[in-house]
Image (tube, rainbow, N blue to C red; front, side, top):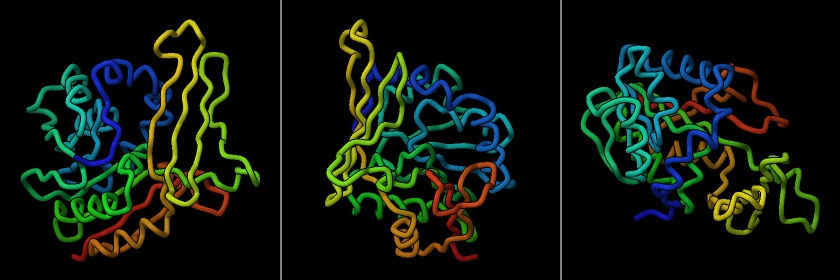
Length: 245
């Protein structure tokens, strides 16, 4: 078993509502269009497919999509949207689980590479992605740039959401590259008043080296799915690596 947090049934049932903003057309449509363009006429594999936020609309565009997901309850929520014939999913960790076939595209979105909390597991994930790709196939990762520039000397936390219904702070261990997202909600939320998600933050250059170890080369890096330029001030990136033709 990998070091990832495991989404249980309670978390899975609330997941879509908790990330409702990520379903907005302005957020989701550019991602689906970007991935569909890269997949071309070939099949795609989503690592950490979750409840199918991206996979379901991508499949609706005619791209055959398969998935790998660690949490069976998350797959259960996906099955409320589409059945296994539309989007087949293997339950297992994305660092080692294999599914049949070769793919023109493997992708990993919304910071989920960080769910693998050791460098070795992240390296294994890149190798697993490459092993699923046909010659010339692409691996895409969407992930944030570690916000350490916002961390004043001596501080340990950076806010990422401050509102009446939710307070979110990230804390960082600068030695081990471990991060924790802390979620605080109004006292009336009861057992849901506090939650935490653990991850390993990773730098773009580190991801490039992982790709090279897996036999892939960087083809493109942009700041967002809309293709905007990646700069020193970008807070996230979408990176595309390609296997040899």
